[in-house]
Length: 312
Image 1 (tube, rainbow, N blue to C red):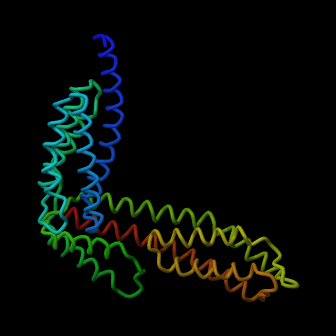
Image 2: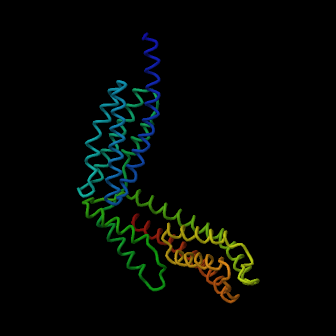
Image 3: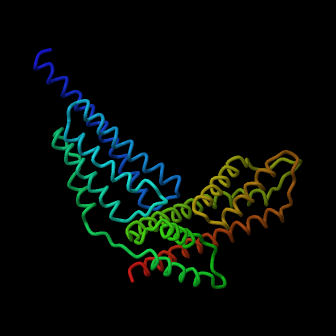
């Protein structure tokens, strides 16, 4: 094989390697982001293994095409994965910072070896910039204080504080003395986006269901045949039931589960329901809509309160 042919073949190998490396790094960084959110033990181990496999694959592939600097940078990062892979051991924020820095070294080595920018600079900045931390025991005390306030009469049933308290307790049990405030804020932001999305779905679908119930009330079944096609209504109720489950909206979950069952039953032949019963269901749907709006607003206020204690 001529020198020119060998150079062309090596170039093709490097191009293929670059594509693979980008995919592995994406998987590694996604897993690392979630790993720092204190997931359950089984999930923690899975994420750590994903990072370890990705780095090992990266180093192994670099070795096959003689990118020795990338190979060394990759395999030298493995001990730092080992430091965070056991959820029962004492893992500190410094352990994650060290792993993040070594991932940055891999980015630098890749850029130098391939000539392709792997966003090393942005990785280094995100790793080395100071992160706002809070003592885990302090966070737990503040959250429990908010929990006591939320147990006052007429407080809507919510799970956000309960989830954060459970996460903080898990960190304490694993010996993590500090929490990343930015990670908590990201959790709060995702929660808010989920609840707003649920509210938008309900606001979009409830008018359709109200129209169906009004049609049923006005021209209730004669000879056991509903006056409207209920298949779409059944699907809409199921969709909102599922969406309520995803955001832990207990009241809405119960209501839409019942509505789904009701619509499924009356869509069957020879099932006759009085106009008064349809009116009752329609009234409960209107009431549930108001409760959902109040629940979402309560969630917004809850997040503001949590953010307040984090910034205090």
